[in-house]
Length: 197
Image 1 (tube, helix red, strand yellow):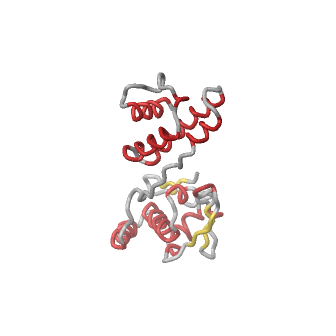
Image 2: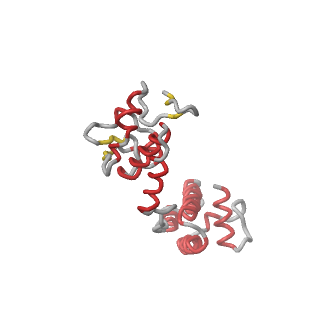
Image 3: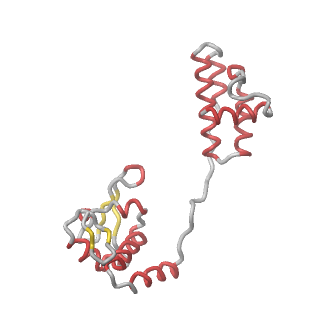
């Protein structure tokens, strides 16, 4: 919080003031609008919004302590949050890259290779995140090729489908169910033995 306020103080005063000695209660709408514009130019939206949230907090405390009127506080904080459309990190794999990964796994006839092929197939076919795939239990997999993904992004449950041949992987219909473990994807020891959790 202090670092964010130091950034704002430096932006507003050209480095003359810091968070400790800037008269926060003297800020008005024209100041906060200028701060917002400067933050947009210099920082990513998440960093700029974090700094602006710190500013709103300080202005609210200034109002609570009686250093600024309610009207001045509301006007100064009536600045919209910074929104931006960011491209997701990483990149999509081409169909050739996915095929090469599957070939590498299918060339390995060990239980680890079979497990990895099944996991890659489900990640791709059902659009799973890494954490979702790791959290899958045997009870999440339905013989009708339906996957129940519990606690997905936003703590919401959703359904996925094991299509495009991912349901044919030996792991899903054999190895994963043989081990007496609730986890769908199990660790494989060096000797090729499936480790039950």
